[in-house]
Image (cartoon, rainbow, N blue to C red):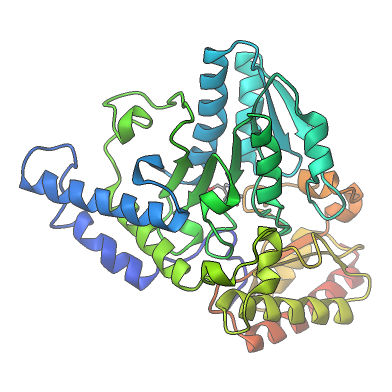
Length: 404
Ligand code: PLP
């Protein structure tokens, strides 16, 4: 099997498993306990927090460990918006992009439904990017929070986060970004990005499912969503997942080792840093393989359409529409040929409805229904992608011939 669905999830890396193992077994203490087992767990948790903070270029007190990306997004969107409105009742709107993951979109809709907030949806261009003009057009004196994802999970488009964040913060509005798909591929320095909150998830990076973190800048007030014993400085109660935090920190460190050093990053426009990285960089290597794969699919499949931005995209995501097919049929056919991929996002898989992300990019519903996403991890090889591209040609032709 050639696994090309790494944007859905990744296996736990051996180094990660080894780092977390002690905290699942012998060193099983509760970090709040006042005895030696508890102290060991607390020390491990503090170490994981420091490491995570280092990877995100922030202070350890600004890291909240969560059960993953969904919880981190919920806490950021609801927690910041509710705290801001509590301080100033006039702050009763949130702005989100039209291509957010449901974790952000549904959090905003919850604020609308239950708390009476207004939701401003920032349109995207045909590549799925938010422009500064589009963001500026929705911001107003009542905007409590802006949330725009760093990189899209369905098409891989990377947003100009530093510029968008500067625009919002210039007006005194906190800026959150969902960096779940960007983590491991793009620079995560929260200072350079200029964001106030950033979400990450362990299982996209080689840590287990159910681990994640939210960075929230120190001065930003946050209304907790989970109440109880006051762990995570009162911002997220519940006995901490020590092994999960250690796993996340280890996975981030391993991914960071594969990142370009800051000096090699362009001074501005983080989105274009991907293209500026040196040839030996793993992200650059994978991006080159991705470009060859995209070229092979476009050349080998008549009518195939690349979705998302042609260059400002995650190194490891190639996404297409194959008009005249159904995405689900192509997936099944590809799996029969040994290639595992996805119709867009794991959350939407199995649903017949066209992807809202593709619709927001102006793609017709009947074309959007033919979407297929290929996403790789850093170990992908040229030979795997050569075989996969050949399989795509056969699968699409087969599905078109059957008229399904
Ligand atoms: N945000 C994005 C962009 C994602 O791709 C995902 C997962 O697919 C999530 C959030 C949710 O993360 P988790 O699966 O850790 O809850």
